[in-house]
Amino acid sequence: MTELNRRWVLASRPVGMVRESDFALEEVEVPKPGDGQILVRTHWLAFEPAMRGWIDDKPNYIPPVPLGEVMRGMGVGEVVESRLDGYEPGDLVQGMTGWQEWVIGDAGMRKLPAGTDPRLALSVLGITGMTAYFGLLEIGRLQDGDTVLVSGAAGATGSVVGQIAKARGCPVVGIAGGPEKCRWLTDKAGFDAAIDYKSEDVEARIGELCPNGVDVFFDNVGGEILDAGLAHIARGARIVVCGAISAYNLEDRPSGPRNYYRIVAQRGRMEGFVVIDFLPRAPEAVADLLQWVAEGRIRWEADVQQGFENAPATLLRLYSGANFGKQLLEI
Image (cartoon, rainbow, N blue to C red; front, side):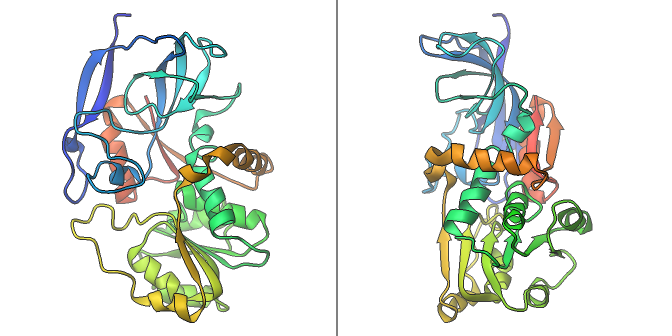
């Protein structure tokens, strides 16, 4: 094989907002598969807000990406050469490809069923959908009739959270940025209401839309949005801490929420989680999510950027709020 493997490596650890210059493009030889391995050509890359934490040299749920190493990330690619039983050239596989055009995989890469849209595989049926599924149903312990509040609701995870809750017959209010995203939540995703944090008083609007309080608050944002939600939790509320994108790129982390005492007064429970703890149960989530998609109960959007050279710029879209739905890059 005469082609070179282009790959983006971590060149520096960002201070504050991540920059494109924190990554460097390298060209190396295409790797060769050994026994029990496959050579995969990457076609799609997926981007997660959590990637910001992966490149900080700080304690996290997984080790930080080492300087000079390929940026970590999920992707979908095509098997080009196989020395692994059950995998044939032409098969599409999903796994931790990293930001590189060629990658060596093994049995840990999941084969996609024939005809599966890679965009769906990397969003609703991937880590994003499973985060929504287990976060809401296991950590949030959704019950019939619960009022559900979702921050970052137009994002890849938040939009699925709200639609799962609607599929279970619960009223749902979403918080998103801008009229277009808010319209999508109510007109397409079936949310009962949406709050535009860019133009509305979020805390006041939650009180108006959830007069009996919020039973499950699925928070992807943190900061002032978390504070606003805590102000209106109901007795026995469950606050699911999935992310804190508002603080990921701050040099100095903000102080804790002012309204935390509401958890005491309302006998609430606030719990964080990481979806990798639930991966052994992935088939359960995928089966339900696929059924809801087939029934039209889950609508999804993918924000698709083009060109491998645009990987760092595509990541930055997550932190500016430019993306609409799951952020993907088609190589």
